[in-house]
Length: 474
Image (cartoon, rainbow, N blue to C red; front, side, top):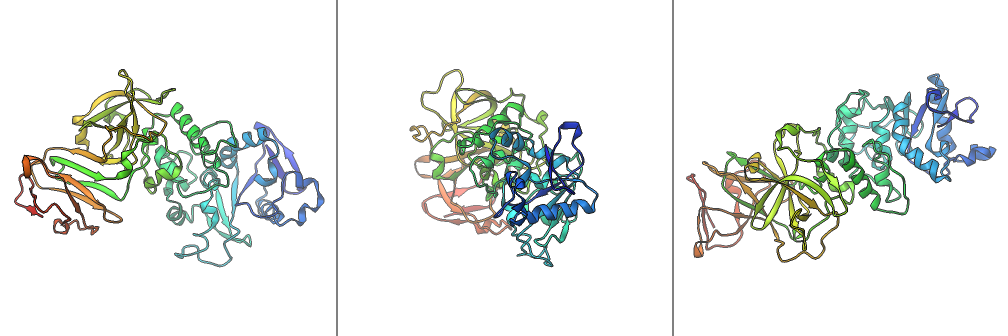
């Protein structure tokens, strides 16, 4: 590890136990940054980026810290081997520092960072992929504005930083024993962040997941796929598969025992997808949640997930309905295990008989625990390749079986905008004695008043819900 001597402004190299105390800089790259090669030229002090070296050295000297580390000049980026080693070590280096100085070049002096439209909230630093681990890893972190004036510590600004990043407050503490959320939540922290190179959206997450893997610049989005495959080797956390969760639609069942089918019409479900996400943005709906490692004793026993040449081999509870299957994941969206997550599956053409191969649908569905009563444990293969030409067995709608009920109502809450929903009720009057399919809208009003239901069409049908005095007519 190379460190810059605060007094001499010269680089020195250290190994393992010989590494002294050091301060570390977190920043976003700008123009005329000082590289390792530039330090050999006396004129490097004239470059704009030298102000970062000067500012970091000044702060460290005030705290009697003799060495600093800055990524611009302490890594030889002309060496691919050294760059790979540095990126795989980055989280550990930030974690081992005495303090991290976070320099925000786009935040002016004397502004209130808590203001709704403050430059602090809008700082580019909160949007970059690499700064995610730089925010979480250090034991101590302080923010500085463009004039190197202190804004506050991470602990002092924890509530504000949580509001900006959706990272739980306990992850912004210096507590080494802090519990880590599940994989999906951690992925969501990078959902709105960007990197200059496509590969870096995966590489910047290595430390967050304690993963070591070689860097292959030029592989593009395949780097994120490799990261997920590495996670599968060392973790049984099925929330890695819980991308595509639509937070705008949530099922609320009161009482929790209604008999019927719910169908969310979504044309995107007419094609199968690979089991792995293409980008952390697919986990965006997990932002703000604090789901930790699940209590697996609550689920039926299952074998460990295993990546094979055919796809991901996994043993899961399957629910079969009208020729379609749903895999019940071993994870929930909340720490109190309020609901289950169901992944819609598409049977792949030419699938083997011993271990059936499925591709997956776009959107995951939330359901009550009662669905496990209808599930059967089965070992299947989940394809890692998208099925772009689905066969005729693929349905266009999502059907979610719900449990038998003695009372009244099924409610669909729409947090954002109204969506078209399809409902089929077991007990109804319909032509040819067949249950009708009735599209309707539900109000976005969070009071969830049944009177807000508006029938759109299908005026010939009359629907009555079992065991209730309420009947809704089109």
